[in-house]
Length: 351
Image (cartoon, rainbow, N blue to C red; front, side, top):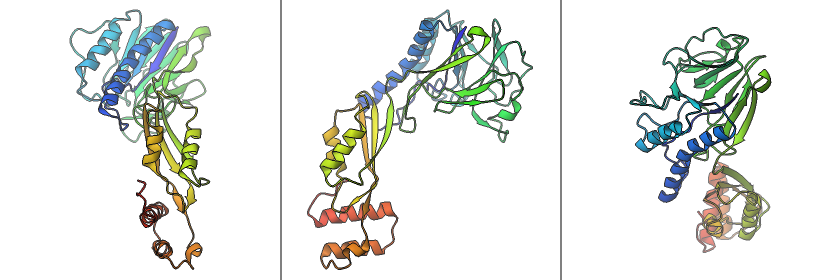
């Protein structure tokens, strides 16, 4: 038997990257379509169950289009059971009316069990629900949504010490948006699959779902990347750059392996020569159209010492010495030096 574990789809989410209106609309549609992609993956892999471990929707007032798409997708795949936790973003929202028979839910304050031969899937909306005794002969999957903690300090925390030694083979979790799998005890593991599609630059890197296979009486786990677009947060050290052309070459080199369909944030870092004025606007213009979305931030500092200008009697020298005497944080000092020297040189401030 095969199952798919996913969570945190946030189907009706606003995009958190700084996109244009049209690109944000497109990303929302792409986010919505990931549910259909997951259902198709389940069909292709002959999976019988999709575990939706919470936050399918982004709020307690989900868009009608997102609700209809969920119900239509589930109805279109009657061979597959979709076991759904609402999670913490749904609030008091609950689906009502005539629902597909293969869309199934869990208890609000107690565990609900769904059995598939020797595979037992337990789940609850409450992280503090009392887990019933599990049969050691079963392959036991437990579904919860929330933040894990070694010991419970809040009602909404998933206390690992209360779940160890209980016969759990796989603790299917939602809430944390980065993929993570850890050992629970000698028998089982706990897993956050992460959100299947990154929305902002706090959700960078490979995104996907977890495919579970019970073949041979053991639970095999594999991560399948499915994101339509990946978000990249790339630091480019420009310490050795001597000109704007060097900066552009360094950025192009750092981004050379990233597909055009992806979203990219570049952060210029390092300590560069005082004679270099990194121009973010020029760099953005040079790379415009290379990626679905591109952001560039200059977080570099100026490499300068007061002794280099102690005998410089020019206005430039006096300006540098004055700024350095202020003892400002390096980032602020670098911005002031860069802006001031640009003005003294008759150039545009490059940010």
